[in-house]
Length: 407
Image (tube, rainbow, N blue to C red; front, side):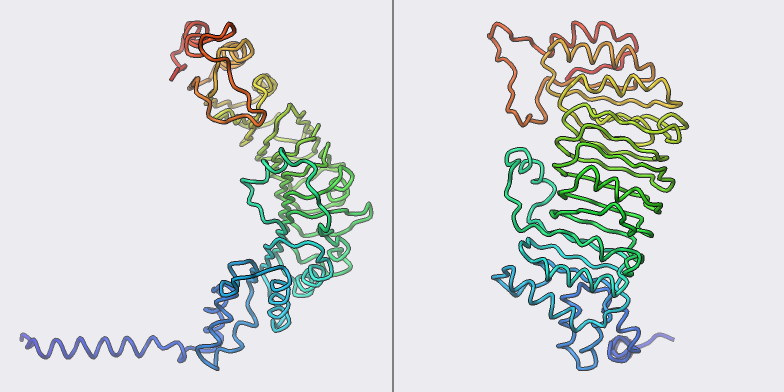
């Protein structure tokens, strides 16, 4: 039996009406509504209270607290004073329990009491992840500022209160901590970070002794990042870090040595000078590991990224390759001017020494401009060498496996 068109339209309208009536949020249980609102950014979650009186207090158990300029889009002139006042207002109304993640991202100076108050809230609410980013710079701009403004005034920088995270003060619930643009001075008897699995220190003023104090006690740390820390000359862990698997060290300008006793799976290192990487025999550096080199980001175990400006610094990493069980090498050389050290690296240290080399690309064009504004001699100068001709003459002629490509 075939329905009339009018009957079909009536059924469809009733079905749509039924579906609409079944989607009324006010009909949902309070705990379900709270779960939905907890998935919203804190600013949006608070604004849901304007929709219904029933929703007014649902945001107070919000588990993800992120405070930045984006949190307060309606405030056009969001200065430090207004930001602090708004964050305080929200935290005072929050239930203070069940916080999974708390993030403060705003340029703050001379605000120690206020930030201490927020850190105490994080500890009291048993926050698992705490992010304090007190800089107005992204990572992209941190290196240029550090290079061209090495003595940038740090007056008013916040000093992180390590004592608040001491195990005796309830800081043991913290599992992830990221600190950006502040001072960190852990004492020799510091006993915090007992359950910390991830630690990111970015643009933090910390001494060699401070890092050692952080790592001297038994912990469950799995991931450690130390980036743009201009005071560090040495990263040293006095004891075996049996849980540490991932180490990232990025652009610490005066760093002279990394000495660790751990069983790393990945190491991501960025530096401008040859920094000795010393690992105890327990490390995967000499055991079952593989070497991956890409874009001159040389890896000497499962994943190690090295970016350097001194071309011959890579020779050290390639010399340890025979100790590895697996070596997979992909190399790209840009800014190849045919200088002696460049030819020596490409020919002897890479092509002739790396028996499993799969591909090496040599490009005379400059891909990254050095910070010292170096430029190669121009064509016609007495010391000009054509990089392409040099690569073809010295490197390609020695390539018997057809792995070299000159572009």
